[in-house]
Amino acid sequence: MKEEPPYETVRQAFSDFLAEKKYRNTPERYAILEKVYSYDGFFDAEMIFESLQNEYRVSRATVYNTLEILSEARLIVSHLFDNTKVRYEKCFTKKSHHFLICSGCGKIKEFSDKQISAAIQVKNFKGFEISHYTLTLYGWCNKCKRMMKK
Amino acid sequence: MKEEPPYETVRQAFSDFLAEKKYRNTPERYAILEKVYSYDGFFDAEMIFESLQNEYRVSRATVYNTLEILSEARLIVSHLFDNTKVRYEKCFTKKSHHFLICSGCGKIKEFSDKQISAAIQVKNFKGFEISHYTLTLYGWCNKCKRMMKK
DNA sequence: TTTGTTGCAAAACGTTTGCAGCCTC
DNA sequence: GAGGCTGCAAACGTTTTGCAACAAA
Image 1 (spheres, rainbow over the protein chains, first blue to last red):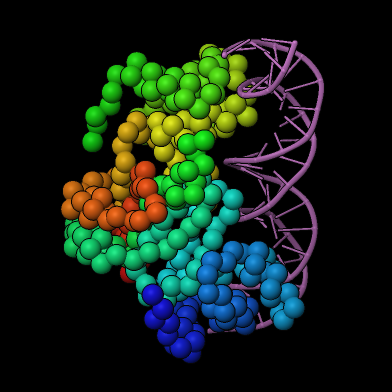
Image 2: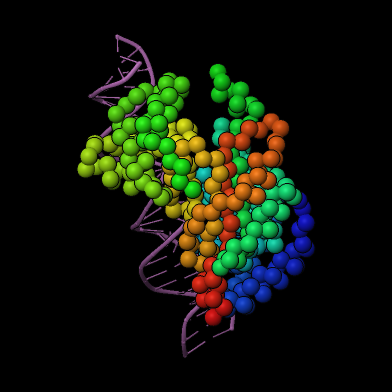
């Protein structure tokens, strides 16, 4: 599941993306990219904002703006598991995201499955070019299933 | 894609669910169920609240509470396509929801695919019982793809 | 020099909560 | 009668906005 490229590659990809889109190179954007890539699991806008406070002066507005750009660049993906806030994870070029969510305790587990990926990749939509996808399975873990029966 | 049961069946299923969970039968809950099942596409909490105002006195709190119960009962499914609000659709016993979303214009299209469904149903997670799932494919429709290149 | 980007603070938005009173069971 | 459920309005937390100042190109 871990095939992370060296940070320099990520930074270069971001730089290329900014150039291509004619967006400006600002130190804030690179500071946020670096922070973002220091997380291994999910993170949200507030986490990035807070943890940058000690090292760099950035506003919330810029954090939100930059996370948007990083999503466009597909260097991160956003997930809306519940309605409380947007959560992100770095993804570089990863195209597929598979989750298992327990409706009882809300625990989120990532998984991967070659059969499923293959079935999805094979599908061809005319007039639509797929960039990435998310599959979310909802259900009940054993622990919650037991509790439900009581 | 339309295999909708008669409304009486839905109402009965709801009534059974309430009984099973020892939730009370209130007129508000049935009024909301009826309104919910009058929509063919997506709806949100505010839409239900507003359109009930003319016929019935219900509070927003009750609408939110009832939509939660209807989700538990799996008579509706909730979707978080963007971070603005929760959207619902009736679903009765439908287990799978497949969407195509254009990252340019945000248009959402539903589709179905037997191969993909089969690959997912076949998967067996020990210690986890799947109730339903959502597959969301992101990409670019032709129109937006063209605009992007300019 | 132009104008995209920033920080700041206020505002917006959907949703949740606390509480007194109501109505199922 | 007990307590789950209701309406109401205020509160909440995340995200967006407006604007003046700044700095990348």
